[in-house]
Image (cartoon, rainbow, N blue to C red; front, side, top):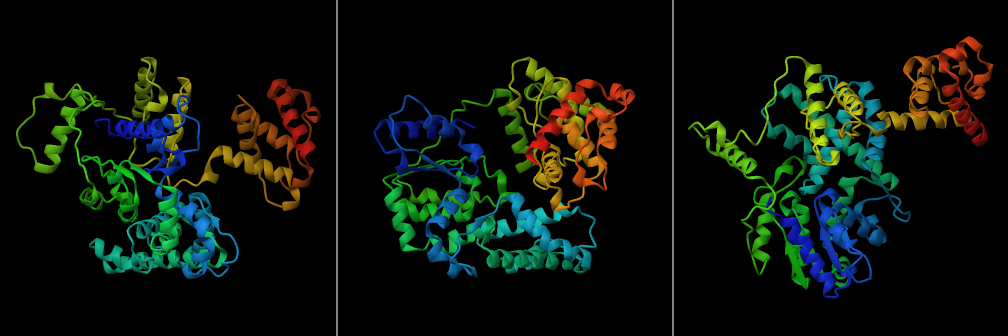
Length: 470
């Protein structure tokens, strides 16, 4: 943490100020979130006018190249409808299609020996495929590698076989329907596009300057690509964090990244730390010594205790309340909420709701992320889906009173669960979806008073909008 990304951003600014065409510059980061400093420079209004800098991940570059060279790789990659353009899947859409394959297998007894939520199974299968693609492993060998990776009992091996079977069925489905999940995009890029002279000429003609940041957090496929491009680049800056490589669980390979050092003409190391406080740096050093070398001597508390606070709570609600209060204290001191991160070994729905609810009491907005959580489980998404069902009764999709209650809670600001439940029960009949929502004006006066005319007016606005749409 010495400010290496600032060096990369300064390099980008230098290239642009030298008159280098922005579109000839390629910047790669493991994740888009790590590219913030480069976006700031590229969007600087004081820079000369011109094209756009190419700031991408390997996945983004792969998707662009697949779209361009689809006709020459589709048939070779095994797609049965090579004459049609492909559909690129997001994580959510990949889970959707995978669910259509896995759900019938679950009913047949797949994974019955483990007690795991279906969405966790789906995300793990996709994760297996993604890691296999990023490390150049044949997906047909996933089960054997998982079996050899841990000393599991033979009777648990069937789980790995079933996971691989689901993965291969999903891959066949994608090939038959022109669907490209992330793993298939990477495989096509690595196996068909990277070796192609046509693609190599395209890279050489379009990108003359390369900047790669956090290269230790990227994958072997990315490193192989960079190694093949370097001889043809006019300039290249590869940035490696010696203390990085934390995303090994996502396929990161610091060793293959460090091998690229031998392909560079110049190497220099940033030693001065411009970001981390001295107290936090001392804590980091002590932790590294303990983890790597089993530090035996006692460390005086005064040397590191300024770097952290350790809070103990006896009860779960007290812990959640305490975390929310600590966040509020930081915000009151001027720290932006977007700069605060809360990590949890497992983010259950109850923990997510409890913490979010307490932060809202302090007026602090938050967002949560859990890869295994399906997008359709989010309340706002459920709300939109339920509105769609009401707006299209011809679809004949079931909608319960509780669904309408949740819809009203999401759509009418400030309404509580009790009033939303009363309104849903009165204005909607489960067996008559085609009738839609009845008017608030038809409710008995005493019930209107209980619900209040403020919420009734908001309900009528929504109902009028729905009727206009229909």
